[in-house]
Length: 338
Ligand SMILES: [Zn+2]
Image 1: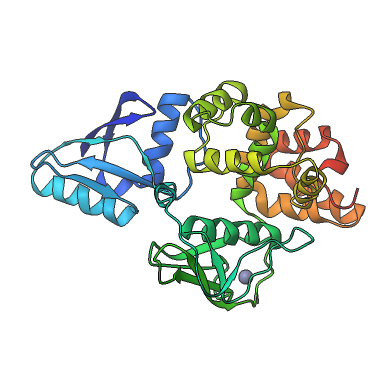
Image 2 (image 1 turned 180 degrees about the horizontal axis):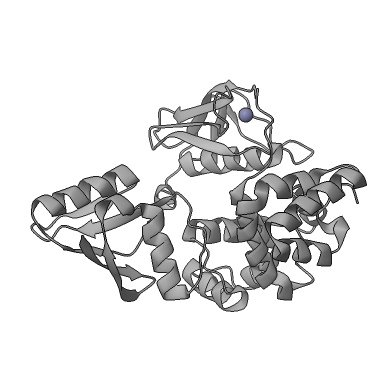
């Protein structure tokens, strides 16, 4: 058994006793969220957990449960019962530190299509790895499937479709200047149903909701933005989501409004711009939806009323709160059939 302590958004707390076999990174973070915020919040997979090793100067970086098991085993072997977990580190913004850019002399610079849509082609050039990743992510949102990161290194990025066995792949790597990214191979073929269930859409919502604030305060640190969202929405948002939300909001132009609305409609979400007070509810429903999404998406996408009502009935069986919430919001805001 271990006696754990943890630091989470600046709070130190006792985790209590736990055994090696009953601890995962998700448990760890859930526990921290519960203790510090009194709530369960979704933590994405782009974080690492650091553990100081008491018998050396090392701080071990843990990215997956296997790594956590290894560290706990080492502690056990040395009979060290106390373990401290440092603040969770957001690794998704690491790649953004490198802002040096160079002009490439081959390939075609990536550009959005005239209709504002993303079209991927072999030979397209991106400013850097972050830009490449961002466009691939936006593309997956546009197309309505969830990305799986297969390889995510500065020197090569490969993404696939999350659905097991689906052959969709995109691969990029740096060009001669080692910064500019080029789309090298592209298998544009989904054999899956590519059901939209992209969690990353959250940043688009937040970007919309806080657009005015972000535009008036473009240099606001994302931690400040996070604190404001925490206060107004009572939800903690991971840094990488805040970062994308900010980026998104700063990019919204007047003529984009209509289009971004369409994007939101398409994903069956609620437009909150005129109603920031419902942010709290949105956050709540959002996290519920992660459990309900197998039901929620069919509801949002049902093209006729009978199918829609049936799915709503299933939602009611699963969560009366979610059902009640969904019936209270105006249907045309999130359901395709309306
Ligand atoms: Zn697919």
